[in-house]
Image (cartoon, rainbow, N blue to C red; front, side, top):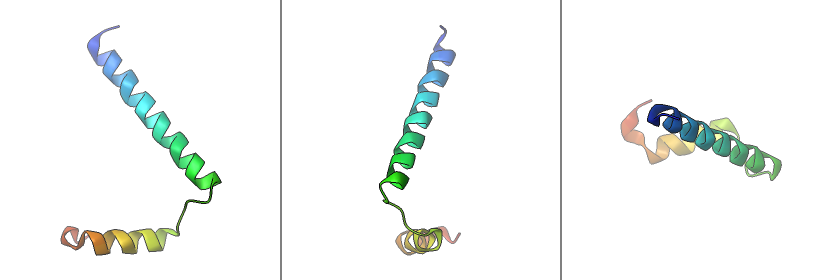
Length: 50
């Protein structure tokens, strides 16, 4: 396996693990409405002006 393929495989596994963590959070009820999350983000990072 070449270095690029190895890096891609590691990146893919990190993505899969992050998705599994997100699904676990949803199942456990660790979620907030999108509008609230956006408001919190904007309050924390007002300099971004998104």
